Every structure is written in C-alpha cells, then in structure tokens.
Figure 1: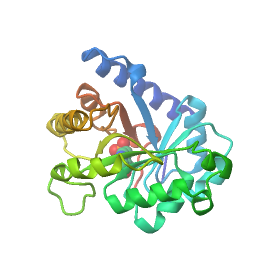
Figure 2 (figure 1 turned 90 degrees about the vertical axis):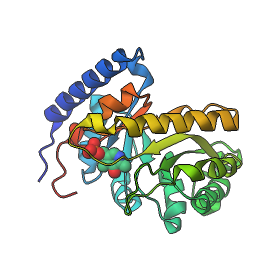
Figure 3 (figure 1 turned 30 degrees about the vertical axis):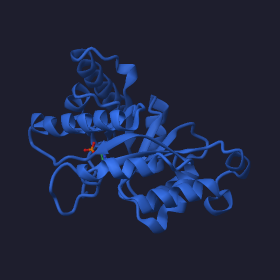
Figure 4 (figure 1 turned 60 degrees about the vertical axis):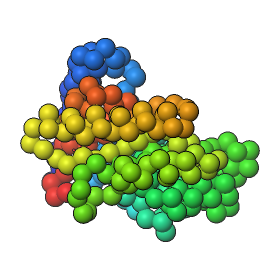
Length: 248
Ligand SMILES: *Cc1c(COP(=O)(O)O)cnc(C)c1O
C-alpha cells in the first residue's frame, strides 16, 4: 500500500524545505519561522521514526486511538505531538495526556474539559509533579470553518469572538491561534482567499483580546506554499512527506 522508506522520506523532506524556503522568501519571511508538522495518519511508527531521523520535530495525528497505538513505540523521541483531527468530548482526557497540542478545538465544552484534565493530573494521567506545579499547559488552536460544508468541523467565524473570550480564561490551556482545513481545490491558488481570511480573523482577535496569537496553522501538501505566502506559521503536511495514503 505505502511506498515510504528512508530515502524517499529524506528526499521528500528536502523538497518540502525547498518549497517552504521559496514561499517564505517571496513574502520576506524566514523559513525558520515556519514549523513543519508531519501528519502521520495511516503511517506506522517506523515511518515517523524515519522522518524524525531526517529532522522533523513536530508530528500530527487525526485520531486519538491511532496515536494511542503508535506512541509506545516512539516514547524515546524528542518531538511535539499534535492532534489535528476532530476530538470528541469523551476522548478529551486521553488527548490531554497523549498530545502536547490540540489544534482542532471547536467547542467550549471541549476546551473546558481539556482544561480540567490538565488541571487534575490524577484524571488526565499527566505527570503528577509537573501537573501540581502547574508546569505543563496544553497548547490549543481553534479550528475555524471557512466554507459551508456540512461534514467539516470547526467553529463559524461569527462564533470566534465569544468563544475566544472564554477560552483565554482557561488557565491550563495555552490558546495560541487559529487553524483551518479549507476545501480542496485542483488549483492551490483557489485556496488563497481562505488562508487570507483566517489571517484577518486572527488579526481581529488579537485586537479584541489585546494580545498576540502567534500561530496560524494552515496549508497541506497541495497548497502550503500559498498558505506560507498568506502568513502560515505552521503547515500540516502528510502526503508530500510520507507518500500517498491509499484510501483516505
Ligand atoms: C491529513 C491531514 C493533513 C495532511 O494532508 P496532506 O494533504 O496529506 O498533506 C493536514 N491536516 C489535517 C487536519 C489532516 O487531517
């Protein structure tokens, strides 16, 4: 099914870095300001290990259960693990325990539950000492739905001002910015308005909250160049790094 191996992952990563550098250069940003999140869904732990050996330090999964199955084999790796897919309330405790970042928060009840789990080490299973010392906060992004599509998760842009006012009050969460998964187009240029919109929404929120929201997670294999031109600080790349997933 998959065709990944050490040399293809290395070569793919070089291509990605080159695309990132060119896109950043076009808008006068430095490529080091952009974080590559390797989205490893459907790929086994060994593929993640190879990508890590090649230099990737952030990884994304879209299912709690899938990551639960892989993480035991990767406990020795120094990396930041992101949940990028929809999170159900009843999996919040597990997610708080197994990820450093939840990039797909789209509901206040979910944010509250994550906050409670982080604040209560016994419940979330996070390292008790770190928890008690208030050491670890869970990095969260709010996922915004920019197109009217029934199946997509994310909050409507109109809901953002109210939701963010409440989320910033949750002391065990580090609310860092916004994320989006726009519709897929054949031509990456068509996605540009969605990326631009997310950046404007972020800028509005910064004014409203009176503080920086440094993270814009947008852009995938097909279109991350355009996302970087529109201000992405994190791109989430699966196929271009690991190869095709076969059935999605
Ligand atoms: C799968 C996935 C990606 C990566 O998609 P590719 O097109 O393979 O790069 C990015 N973000 C989310 C939320 C995903 O589920």
